[in-house]
Length: 457
Image 1 (cartoon, rainbow, N blue to C red):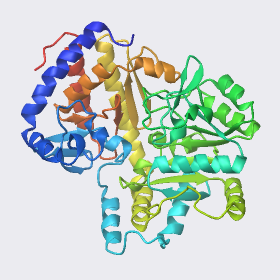
Image 2 (image 1 turned 180 degrees about the horizontal axis):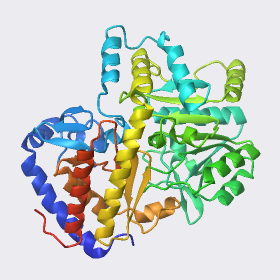
Image 3 (image 1 turned 135 degrees about the horizontal axis):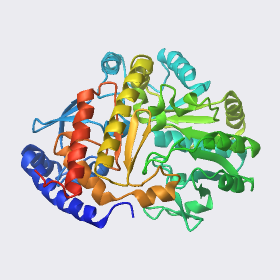
Image 4 (image 1 turned 45 degrees about the horizontal axis):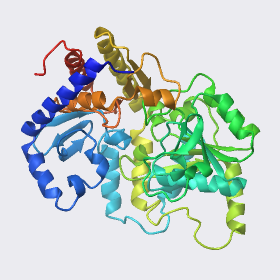
């Protein structure tokens, strides 16, 4: 059990007190919620926006850099950053300028612009893969990669890791249940059993992967280099290299989804570790906050794609949407890649993330809690476990939604935002040491309350 019962009981009491505090602090958000609920369920345009444990949504007036201002005039140090969508800060000046300039010249045309060659060169130079396509979301990119892998290999199955997340891609909605791959019961409206065409493996277990690949049915391994959409699980030394080698031996394609692990460095985990995947996916932050994603692939894959397109039955392939690769997106992407996602920016982000992780660890140690803090570049996460996690099963066991949400709400009411889904924090190029100190102080205060050492102020 990751969290002691007395701490969970105090967390439940904390939630009650902090929800009342939120109502008192946010009268305008409360009023706006009432208006918005007339046409949007829960008052939000996306139901995920209700995942903050607040009694009604927090409505934003503006977001700039690492600061969010709500409609009640309260300013927040933002460590959520749009759950990575604004990883490089809200409205980076180069991106905002590129959007404004391009908006006057056209948004979408179903034709390439003069930006195309330049953006392709930026992507290839940064991430090491020569060929690229642009989609609207990482979900679309991952779905395209899955389709291509099946078309190129003639195989039907996809291997993902227990505890993974790859957006809306149905093929990733499987998990391990007593060692057997089953479809996740949370998936809505699914007519066929995904477990017939997807298999789940435990992360960091290369022997299990080898056994699954040996059957010759796996078209694609789709994985993040580290599991980041659960309690964070980092790869053991050598695991990703072994995974790549196993895929090669069994003629299985491999895709690294770096939508979150782009926090590692300017070229993501892939370039930091000199990896050579068949496919590479990056979503969310690549265009500075606009809906956009990319997937890259090798020259060998591109040649095989060309053959498939030349020989397939005419008609829609199921890959691509009308707005994908629009001119506005490429303008923002060029600005983000060339002027925002810089080595200097990453040096600042990683340094402050280390300061943040150290501060969180010191607070945990001070309160004698059996928890750990995990970091991958600019991303740091509190995990309710006494040691770093090794796989998705351990991650699931380490999650305590009540305590998580109590901490999140406590921090929000002290004008600090962290991601509502788990204990993840991100540091942007615009984050300051003062922001980090504010989060660490608020976290320490929350732990003092949870440990019974302090009353809720």
